[in-house]
Length: 330
Image (tube, rainbow, N blue to C red):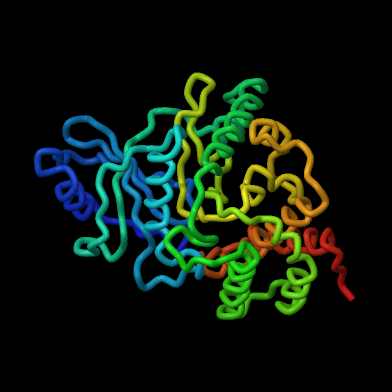
């Protein structure tokens, strides 16, 4: 996926980073040692073969001078904290961190090397028809169970893992909506709704957020395409940069309850341990889908998309959720 945030590096820079991380003896002496992993939307990632033949993955955050959404500032450090928490406090499989460089001495961004997982991307393999239906169903149930295990990690505050922290979930989620509205206003993007209409809808339903009293680790972005599968089992969960402390019902596996084009959540929900939502839970879930649709619209301006496909989709889904929350156009 093309994006202004992709901080691509030259072969010479990649060799310098490898030397800093693994020593001169691991610097490849031939060409073709690095292959960009193109599916991501934000960071640039490379699959790298070291001189010894061992493979690793390098992730590089956006350049320092590229504008990003408020929630994306310092996001790689948030990911590193999320991976630490998952690795230390759960049995959920995540890639091992090999080397972290936050110095900006070689590249104008945070970066880290991690373990290469020799497996298929679950979401892409399913979409390509390379997995049987029962394997897909079982994989989604396993994703739900793994996500539930991640949610058992308890934080000291609501909101981003490294702060700013909030005393209540209502405050944290309201701040996230407000940040996104400000991000949209900064680039003068047309949401199809006045920002105050979105604020009003949030205020009308914010009482449902008060049911959430314990800040739990949530991935927010745990889709099938952010997991790896081998021999019918999930062997790694990837891309933890959007994790925060909040409400498990915000997890991506539930998005299909509201938004078109997302997977049927039934198998995920079975593994997740949630089959039926109460009225207030359903309201919260719609608010989280509202937030996602809002982000999809706003981030297109920051990514520099050259077509309107994602923008149009986000606008349509934002309309859908606003309607579900009781707001129709005058």
